[in-house]
Length: 234
Image (tube, rainbow, N blue to C red; front, side, top):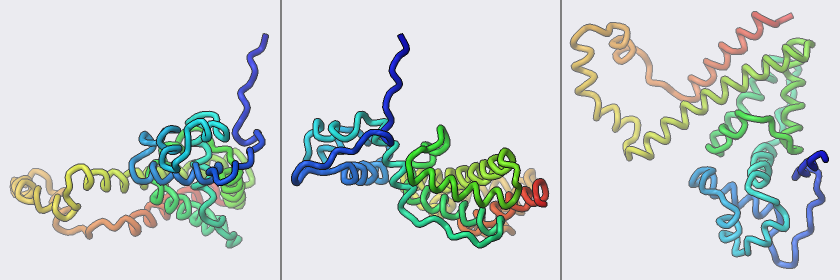
């Protein structure tokens, strides 16, 4: 006998909340607050129910398990901002897709790891995917190439955000801001550069401008879009 296919959280009817009891949206918002503050690992059905003063059994009435809760969290995050309006230009539109995704990921540090795996299938996520694919199809009508182009943009955004979040985690772990950390390693770096074995590193330290996350992101995104234009532009 064929095993029954588990139902999806997106296809099941959503029960109406009982009187004065939290509903799905309240549970999802509470879970997102925990994840934003403490990381996704801190989210559990018991924790979320407890934060709302609800019994865990009440949460299970709406959401079957933690995986479904995470799916709902992902979709809620994807629906926080309006879709970027089309400018009628593929480069501007893909750029808007990238900036919107970056803003969402920076707001919810746990989200990048979830979007890097299987595609999100909630209604907000599907709307975002449709909008992004429309922008990519304006670059090339070949849907396979358009999907790859969009994947390249998403991969760049995920990598850029991961690097920025790693710096924030380092500050939290060490208790030192970036400026304080630079001062702490300054004497060591001065000795390394004085030895003369790393001339390019010396130029980087002494001549280059200090990195700015927004400026660096825009520069890298322009490079990605330039590459797509050269490879796929009609």
